[in-house]
Image (tube, rainbow, N blue to C red; front, side):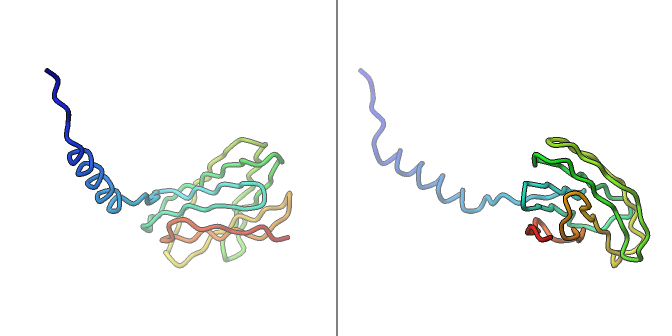
Length: 129
């Protein structure tokens, strides 16, 4: 004879799954900057903790070639990144102090500068010329 599982056991297991799913929140944590270009918006995932050596990974998910210039807030140029469509590149940065800011400035196509801020989880930068 086959036993049938009572309906209340299914309901209890469903309630337990729902209850514990509220405690599990998806947070993006990273030890590098990840800049993703998605057409007319840019998403930045930043590291939570300050470190002297950080990497910046730039992902071009758009259909156009992109040229970035990396700069310090002092005006010092750190070089250029050229990304073909559907490609990525990385750049290593050395932060002397936690208050020094770094920027990625899109030259082609031109857009507003991307400020690399430590300690913010995920932030979006809207498209502006």
